[in-house]
Image 1: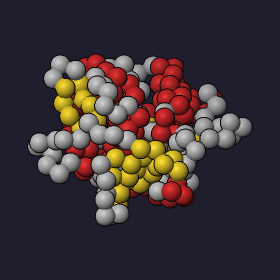
Image 2: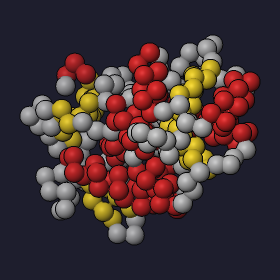
Image 3: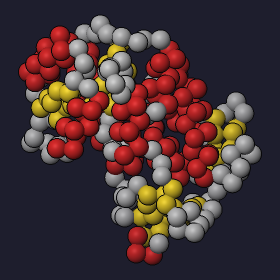
Image 4: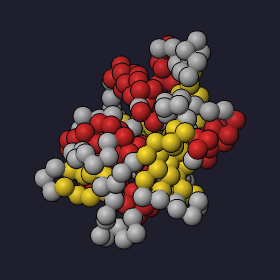
Length: 245
């Protein structure tokens, strides 16, 4: 991110009475804010220009925020904060499962939202996956992960699509092979959170990653469950230069 340029926010909410004053407030805080009244409008604006972070309502006419969030985390590396009146725990878990970085419930204090935006951006900047070491590629059990391209390939060289959250989760395991990582640590490494209430979201993300890399996800051999402890990557990991991969 260019430090001399303002942070670009895309604010997606169909309620103009909330969206417009909030956009004005965020602009006064130094952000470059683009507004979108629907998911389709947001997709169109992202085709024209990128964003450093998306503020996203869940309940909107047409495509909802959950669907748009899923698209963003699977196809783009853009942090997402949900802004919604739906504050039930199940909705928060769904948001975490599909890759949202934070969740703010209406009504909220605008200063709190600004603090959360800055916190998410700081976490995104310091995540290990943001700065791969010297163009190295990770190899494990026939798999290969290229952090720079965020590309996972199997033993035959076929590319296996993974979401941004799955990528960060796999990076956490690859950087700590044969180490037990408990849910709180994984959640902090992957989502940058201190929210032990969302342990189940980690379980679901691990399950999704297992379906991508295990021969039999119901009998996992690579990502093993350590009862009472968390999860462990039961594989040796090699780091090799890009030109040797």
